[in-house]
Length: 144
Image 1 (cartoon, rainbow, N blue to C red):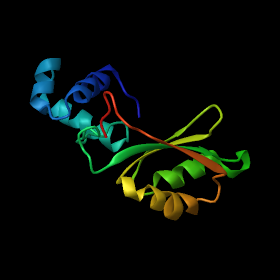
Image 2 (image 1 turned 90 degrees about the horizontal axis):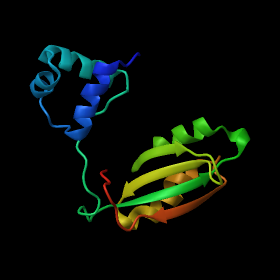
Image 3 (image 1 turned 30 degrees about the horizontal axis):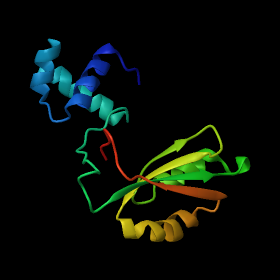
Image 4 (image 1 turned 135 degrees about the vertical axis):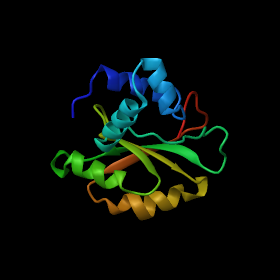
């Protein structure tokens, strides 16, 4: 899929306000509402754009954000391991890193569920050599 300048303008507007109506975007950009709707559909179906509601983790007290740094041996395949981890419930994202650790796993779960997540879900992925967990205590400009 090729993303052009108009796609990027629509995306920027949605990043600022995901609830904005297509008609308002069309007016802002001087294009038809149908064009906006078709572009958003195309971007969503291609996996470039996802529009959803996010919450402020500083205010939402039933869950916490934790970051798990994982080491994976070279021969295990970083992509396969990352994809397996990304499919686990409560995982928000997995990123491939350069540095001491290979993967950064962001989880969003109830505080008392961390041990269960590590023991019963993450531990099922055999290609992980070691982990280090960081618990986020406060967030600035973070939405989950």
